[in-house]
Amino acid sequence: MSQNFVLKKGLDIPVKGISELRISNAKTPDIVAVKPTDFKGLAPRLLVREGDSVLCGSPVIADKTHAEILLTSPVSGKVKTILRGDKRKLLAVLIENDHDFNCVEFKTPATAEEVKQTILASGQWPWLVQRPYGIIANPELTPKGIFVSGFNTAPLASDVDFCFADQFKFIQAAVSALAQLAPVHVSLDACNPEAARLNKLENCPLHFFQGKHPAGNVGVQISHISPIQKEETAWTISLLGLAAIGKVLVNKKVDLTRKVAVCGPMAIDPSYIVTLPGLPMKDITGQWGTLADEARVVSGDMLAGAAIGPDGYLSFFDNQVTVIKEGREKEAFGWIRPIRYKQFSTDHSYFSWLMPWRKYNLDTNLHGGPRAFLMNDAYYAKVLPMDIYPLYLTKACLAGDIDKMEKFGIYEVLPEDLALCEFVDPSKNYIQDIIAKGIDLMLKEMA
Image (cartoon, rainbow, N blue to C red):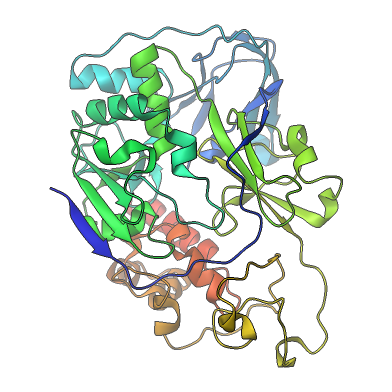
């Protein structure tokens, strides 16, 4: 049974650099990175050595806690380098692509148990993210539901219809298979229900949301459809994940090819590329020119993505690369200047509110440093359409008070859900980092 939700709170950030709906490059990288750091809760155990040959779909990394959870190679070739950090922490496995795409072949599952085993063996289980805490889903648990956001409201987000219009049969196959494990709930944009034909999906209830960002966040959708209580679990998966699982079920092989939006104020040619996760950013430096020192390269959106730099690699979960300017300049007189047409303000501090159609060249400049929290929770709550107390939750995380963290909604959120609170925060606090540390504390103390 479908439901309709109209969200009054939120904020759409008017930033320049949205990608044009065209493919500017089909880049099959010579080197791809398999990064265990993309997966929260994964304790990686290396399964390959430098020089080993791998097929597309061959296991590369396993989880020490659940050995059946695997990360597999997106290409065929040889293991070129194993990157380690401090204390020999495993950062990435670099695989040299032979461009042959020789693949491991998987069987077509018939039962629920076979579906689970096929997803695990193909390395596609990490697409399933467990809430609370945002860790890889525990295959031994049965969630109350599997939730999918069929649209994205983040700044400069990739266009769902452009990216997934030709992926419907794979998405449907994945939905039908996952429905054998738990009820699947798909949320769609009420203003564009025809996107990628997702309104025709079967074996799942559809929910329609209307509102500004973060209406497209799956955490916000869960809070309205079926809020997560203590001792409950829910799984989430993206459209990218559904398409990848569906390709395994239909074609019997791993195919992580995706359309990636390269966007942002610093992007020279905002458009789409066709590539794989683990793409080295140095392969697409032509998208932002020779200004690497002035640009911040983000895997994901500008609010909740990870700053990976020009030497980083595209995340497993992302189909967006945002390039924004490093804001290092100091501004004379700052906020007391009476006219600032080129500055965006969420309040009426500048004249941007008189020009709602205008787009801005936003950068990373905070225009100040961290200071004391405001004492009014409504300031943050006006951009967060969830029934929680973001200010008190953030303070509880800072204090490490587990009882208050539970009381104020830690089970319902991930850092990305409070990204807008961080953006509008006049106190310049790193709210997402604070929430992430609070979740880490919950994992440590409540596991």
